[in-house]
Structure formats: C-alpha cells, structure tokens
Image 1 (cartoon, rainbow, N blue to C red):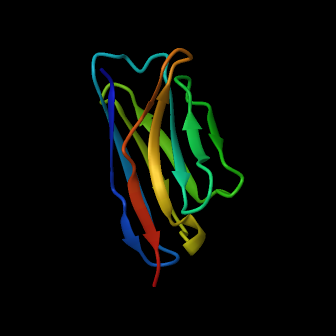
Image 2: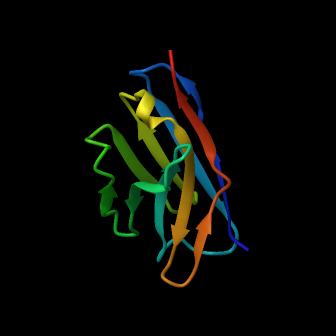
Length: 116
C-alpha cells in the first residue's frame, strides 16, 4: 500500500513563500515513478502545478512562470515544491501525486491560502 502525506501548507501573505513536502510510504521504490504536485481551487478543475521524472526532467504549469521549483529525494522518498512570489490566485488545495504507468496515487491534500 502506497501512501502520500503532504505537509507545509498554510496562510501566507502575497509575495511570500512556502515549501510543500510530500512523504511517500510503502514498499514501492521511486525509481520508475513520476512525482508531481497538482492543485484545485474552489469551483475549478484540478490542474498540474509541477512534475518531475525519475531522470529529473521537470514540467510546470503555464501559470508557474519561474516562481516554483520541484525537487525529489528518492532515498528519502520525498518530493518538495518550493513556491515563491505567491499571489491570491495560488490559493488552492495542493495534492501530491505519484504515478508509474500502472498505478496512480494521491495524497489527501494541503491547503494553501494567500491573503493579506
């Protein structure tokens, strides 16, 4: 059983920064797993924020515009998302995702609220 647990969300002022972390538990190795972060704002569809392959290729949503950085540490089974220059449009629940072409796993989500 694979579980993903997010942490690091909270309330931040516009222009501020947050570091989201996702801990993967279970017997699976991350060697063939694409790790990603998605978000869902109220009334909107879930959208890709960032993803990183085992080979460290990265892909970001168009709205990121250089503000966020995704990283992974496979031995620790963690994936982080550093978010800078946050604005109110970044307010959403952020979900960690792990997929290997056969299975798709999701965390429970962590709330990020950007407000003054």
